[in-house]
Image (cartoon, rainbow, N blue to C red):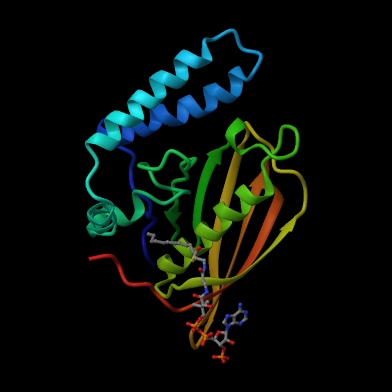
Length: 205
Ligand SMILES: CCCCCCCCCCCC(=O)SCCNC(=O)CCNC(=O)[C@H](O)C(C)(C)COP(=O)(O)OP(=O)(O)OC[C@H]1O[C@@H](n2cnc3c(N)ncnc32)[C@H](O)[C@@H]1OP(=O)(O)O
């Protein structure tokens, strides 16, 4: 039996991860403040643009950055679900379980809102697509999403811990079947069935 294993990159307390954590806070704070805020939004926009100008000035060429992103341990650092270097990632940390499934817990805030006080359905789809992909990796046979079928059973709450699970259920030639769910308080909010096809795009070199 395989021991549980962290499958996603551990966020660092410094460097780009710390800057990305701050950027996530800015996104959330802008939403909290809103158009009725007395904060000087014009000045805030200038400050944020100056931060972006500084980053762009020190960034490598795009093709070099793509090579770096896909080198070594970097593969789980930048995706939009688990990546500690990606400010739009919640981020979710996934653990491979001894029973072959993967599991993670996260709480989503205002940037991920769809219906009032609840998670946008597209965000649940993004999280489940990625989690099913990681479940395939953990199972040892992975591929690209060909079909993702979602059932939204009940609204998924913001501001509460959500448990995200995924497990590979079968492999038939190049066809890989995987299922998963988002649960809150032990109730299934969203369930997913995925068909993946064993195929991998080449890494940039
Ligand atoms: C630690 C963490 C690590 C890292 C973990 C990272 C996890 C990341 C997870 C994210 C996953 C994504 O979002 S991936 C990105 C989203 N997906 C995509 O962009 C895929 C775009 N589509 C494609 O590239 C293609 O259509 C493919 C690869 C799906 C299939 O193309 P292909 O390779 O040419 O294969 P093809 O011959 O067409 O099909 C092979 C067989 O599958 C069947 N098939 C193909 N598509 C379908 C379909 N939609 N529905 C039913 N069946 C289908 C065919 O009938 C055929 O069956 P038979 O005749 O053999 O019986």
